[in-house]
Length: 417
Image (cartoon, rainbow, N blue to C red):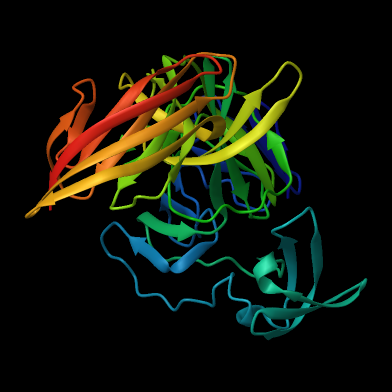
């Protein structure tokens, strides 16, 4: 059988008979090309970091569009059949003696051959190049045996999990002077033997360790803002095609923000300690997002005249549009400080503490600072009055340091233990 396909129609020729089909009126949600039948026309996919949830409608005798985890196959209509389930395509032991293909998780590398043995985390593969024993945790298993696909005697909707599709987030924050650029992308992996075209698919944020990057193609950039649905972070994708056994880098969003305030922040835990306490400062930035950004890990990059210098990797919660947020950018040596408990006068369960902090600005620029003092009791009173009380057990000292200047702070706090 030969299939001829163009943009508007395809023709099918079998023997001397031929038929021409007009594709214009057909709306395709997901089209799987090559080895997957053309009947896979209406498939809804939610991709997460460990697999995908697929929902589709099948006719009697057809199989799913993707290789399903058969333990998750659920019939959503009436007259659901009882099925004898074959071994999973992803079960290494079930593939012993079969011809398989294995794809490296770490780099662009694959082998094809007969799976001879599986022993714990190791498998032995007989190929034309020789016999290899390799760790199964470093490879994806792709069955290449020409087996008949699973046939389901059922008409109606089904849903199931598949490991054919998964994704990982890629997030960067680029700091350039008083500007902050947040860039989000997705690495969507197709482990199936067929090229797939996803239409209106959804990416769901999940908790999983980042997977190594495979070979990938670069998709066109367009803004896809994160949404929060039932406590989940999701992205709605536009149509995209992913080659077999490959990963595609899809641009989700790029947003540039003005940094409204930068300051250096440190924390002081006010336990009974008469010795000097060195304070560690971190540079923070305050800005107001104009779109949602999900919780997760972001890699910082510092823009210089010619280079981007990698900084700390930041983990923070979800950023909501039109709500000002302060994030910690990196640890800094621009300001140093030492705190010391000078006196502690105790009267019953009350203690009056006197604290001193010596600060130094090591730069030639004026810098804003913030020190959060967490007391070892409930705060009853404090002085001087320019200090702010954050809550029942915490004070905040904030101000400005002149360029290359030293600064001395002395304050009292009365607490009840």
